[in-house]
Image (cartoon, rainbow, N blue to C red; front, side, top):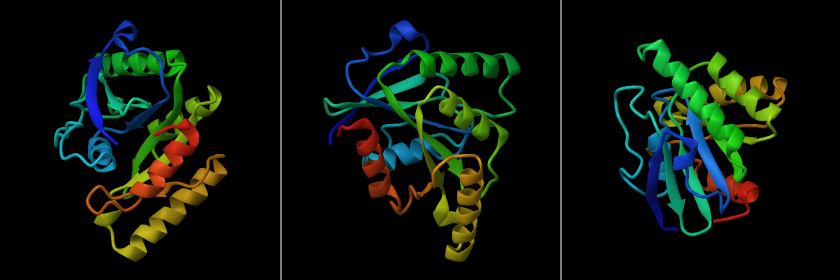
Length: 193
């Protein structure tokens, strides 16, 4: 599938028309969101990566063929970004999530080496409240031994189940682990691609 950068937007009137299903990608700053998107679409740098957290400040839209939009949302939870900027990002993302009628799912990306954070749970519960399907992905599984990755995966799965969410997908941008499973889930929910 041909994927191309469409546009960056900071205001709802800048969003592309809601003429096809859309799947957004969200996660804490530096969780590997852009790397996951690049691996998913077989690109080295279509979604811009940075070693500095908090670089993505606008909503970036990508066109996946003529049947699907993929959307890269700004990361959340980075303490060194000024409070007023974080508040604006939060408001901006909430506006996007509330107003995008064609939004079918949000891929919630969590670093498998960390704990489920308050921001992650806030986002998941917000999505549940507004009946937007979350697809939970644990990234950076290649950074742990197989046994440690399994243990972390099981811990996350149990915690997510207790919170009322389905099992996550283990993903590695480095090896491609989880790529097919994630595309399958996106296709099931979006009915596209």
